[in-house]
Length: 343
Image 1 (cartoon, one colour):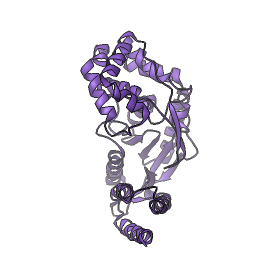
Image 2: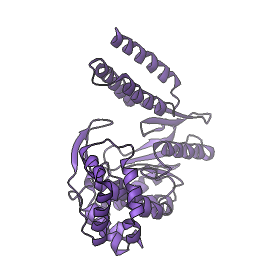
Image 3: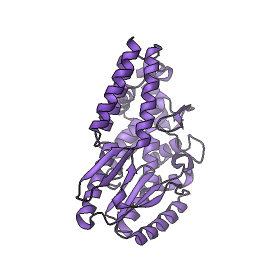
């Protein structure tokens, strides 16, 4: 059945349209688009005959929010990943993943994860006030340390159909082992599934009601610090079986001090008000970033329109927190910098 879905011409054409929308028109996209109908037919034949292979990745570095190596796949491979993820992986895993496993899924994302943490902190406060603890965990070099054989065993459990197994293995083994390419649609789904067992253990066996994860970043909230220490050891053991480990940022924090999560500092006041503010590091990085972008506008490397697209995107993100004063201050700062450009 999965094979019929993946090799259906209509599904392939729809996946082609989705892959094309919103993408930069690079050489890979252009080559496929120039012969789109023929390209889809060739891809359909390769998928039917199971002769499809993944093209070499385009490697480049990004520096925000931190330095990372991105491996971007070719346009043809984006089409395949769209049809696999949208028609097979996501529909099945929607009912497998826990509610607040928040990354890389339709209808979820950073705002969903932030609101999940708010729900958890408010729920915990209603029962215990500010007397409690947060175990904040971060997996070391997550994407770079994923072992292909371990991952394939996990993926095969959820997708045992032979054709889907072949396609999943083809995508997983298209990059160096260990590791998955950052920035690929299927890779995001596989990474979520890799530590699904930790989610199940935390919310099931360990009985943690306030638990959430955004890819390699997750938290457990509980009133007993000693119990969280035990939970930490259980998590370490579970990750060890997966060939993964926690990094040095993992810690147990007093609930009253709040926690950093997805670029914001979150805490509850003594009278029960939830507060979400951008971290100092986030503010410093973005001030520096926008000063550089203003220089790019001045040098003609960036249009004013593109600059404000980027700035307004940051503003919208910041306004999901209690950051009205900060945004007003940044507006004045940007206005001053842009005036200097015009002079």
